[in-house]
Picture 1 (cartoon, rainbow, N blue to C red):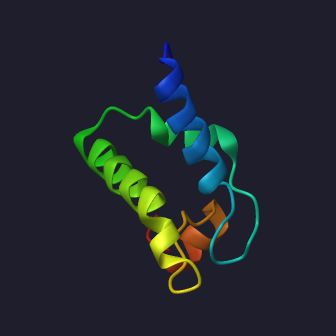
Picture 2 (picture 1 turned 30 degrees about the vertical axis):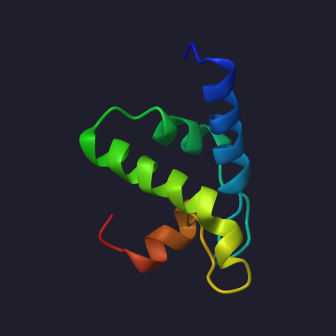
Length: 82
């Protein structure tokens, strides 16, 4: 993807912020996060928009709530139908 410097910084921050599963503390696969980040479906775009907002506001939530993307294993445990 051709990203501006600003977009690249946002993407890099997203990848770093969501790199750890909030449940098991394992590392999320960077390739999966990248694939999601550049997904073009309306659902994925809206979800990414909301995750970016949460990421930016996370300083307000520190030690109050845990924000993250579950790893594949934890996601399967909480949603076995996938």
